[in-house]
Length: 308
Image 1: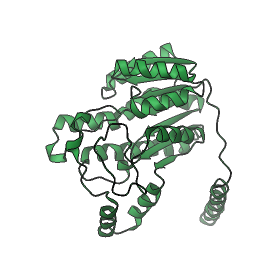
Image 2: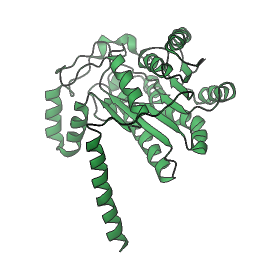
Image 3: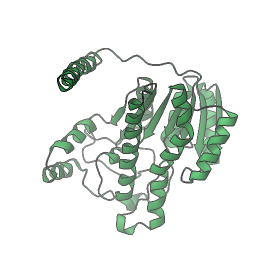
Image 4: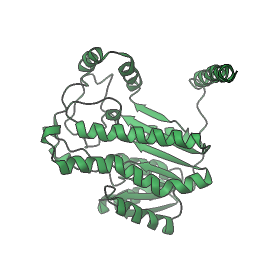
């Protein structure tokens, strides 16, 4: 009897969710009001981090900026204030250092208050083939791109759970869904970041904390300088993304509680094909799209350990 009832429930809810998705193709989702929320962005000194700070600032939020670049953060803070942030605080923090993450997090909680929107954006790329990558750079990639998410969640998630209110945003990568030739450590770190964020999201739902939302962002290469020299075989289908466009799409995803954001939209199809096509066929398809072509790491050596 339980089997029949649960199966019927799943079928009915499936119809409802599909109908809901269809309606939202024509009717925009309602956006939530985040005025006054405390938003922490790691890697906020440049690139997407800076642009997201400006977008959040325009929504009259309280901004907390983390980066290892003091001057970059100062400039982001200045731009955020001009964009309308109610308050802006910035802190030097090396996200690869667990103890420093915890120390600065405690300082934020004392001086600003509980963080209600956490954006894990800091990221690095070594720009070397796997066998050419020193162990220290591989470890640093995992520490910044993956392990830092563990420590920031540990620091700020308890308050969100207690209030059943908050939002966890993971800026991952399409390389966390589909591997790229020549970016082994980077792909590994982003796959881990996606899996971690998704698992914590499911854990929150299972414990009834549905007020804490999650958004996992997986963009293709973004023209921020982190991947200077990277090219795309089919720019119409898989364009190098404009950072302003990406930042705006991320904010929209947060305001509408969108769980997964893949950019460009063709990534949804490519990811789906990966799960259903046999390996040889997908490898052939990937070569056709240019996904299997080795990333020319020699064109962006200055991006080694570059914080996003």
